[in-house]
Image 1: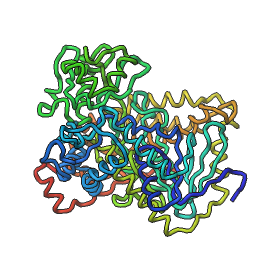
Image 2 (image 1 turned 90 degrees about the vertical axis):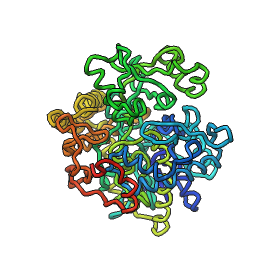
Image 3 (image 1 turned 45 degrees about the vertical axis):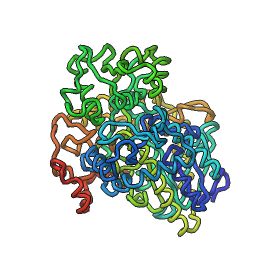
Image 4 (image 1 turned 180 degrees about the vertical axis):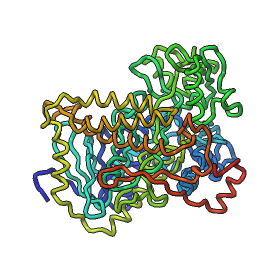
Length: 576
């Protein structure tokens, strides 16, 4: 082992410090493991914070008829039955215990009259199921998990970006990373690694995601030989801010609609009546996003190309109490008082249903010693995620990933890391300093975002997707020529070079998978194949690395157990 690198050793290394990473860390610590947590940004600055509406769990505190079976059914229905049903089952069964645990650790929730956790309605859920703290639920969750983890004692490496997983034969041996502040390289040795790095939103220009979300975990897993699953399913949240330009894409929580917000077009028509007369504004996200998009495209959009979302018919005090973050967000950023008038909203790239393929029970990937949980992992949500299911996903599978990683680590000796992998990783990172071209990472990123927004957006066609593939191939060549100057200290251009590699990998995976799936299902809408196809309802798209080529294959979904099949029997065309 080369001693010229700063080196740290852990039983379990967790990459990412959002809800899934912190919950995995807590579980691994409780099993007596030595745990390291590496995060690209600061501890606590995770996308979990942006999950404002609540945690979906069938606690039956408000609707006594709710139970895990109903939650399972809603999740499968929302995911258009493409979900890994075992994940959906475990998630629905275990979410209430995970919420109670959070409460025991000090999380504060809004309460019912008799003191139980209050639950609100949300799109796609058949009962009031979202446990919440106003519209700041994710923030409270991170605060609680972070306090618990820090108190239990993990080592945290902040503002540290992982660029490669290190291998020992066929198993994971650790990770290669660098400190963002000074550019120094650091090597982590670990018996097991948990990926909890979130999604891919920064490949699109209009996104609710912040700068960290560049698909790092999916790219790391893919390059190490793990499989990616159903990458075509990218969720566009129906309501992001559209004005002013500086805050375009910033999330407007679904809780606004959960509390009675109404969507109208510029003519004042409540247009959701046309698209889903039964559920209206509380339809699933894919339906609402496409409805707003269609209204705008057909000339009924608002001044800045969106729709109006109005909650001002409710008493001002009620709105301020139930939606404090939204009230302040619009007041300060858009100079709009949401208690007095409507918000202007439009679709924004929000969440990735696809990701690293994992085992339902253990969260293990197809690579020995590598685990994944949260948004970076795929399976639970199928073709479209229901609001609120992401927070319970983090808790249920964050815990299972931590447990799986510890069980694996206990059986292992300390892995060997050969220095050639580390030297290769270092060379790849330093290459842009050594080139002298006029290729700039910012212009490549801008071009990538335009390709994804225009050609791989809410609606897709074969022609557009083929154009996107050609565009991505040109960008891959340009990335090989990226050149930057300056030093490794505080160099955002250099950081972007590494991020671009990840974003191009996931963008190609999304585009290839979208081309292959010749149907419309959930968040994947093909204008040229507008209907569900029952055959595709039983097929997953699997992406893997073969040599230096991206390989795509279809694999049949697992057959549903008979008793679970019975729960879904009342569904129309359950296979489709």
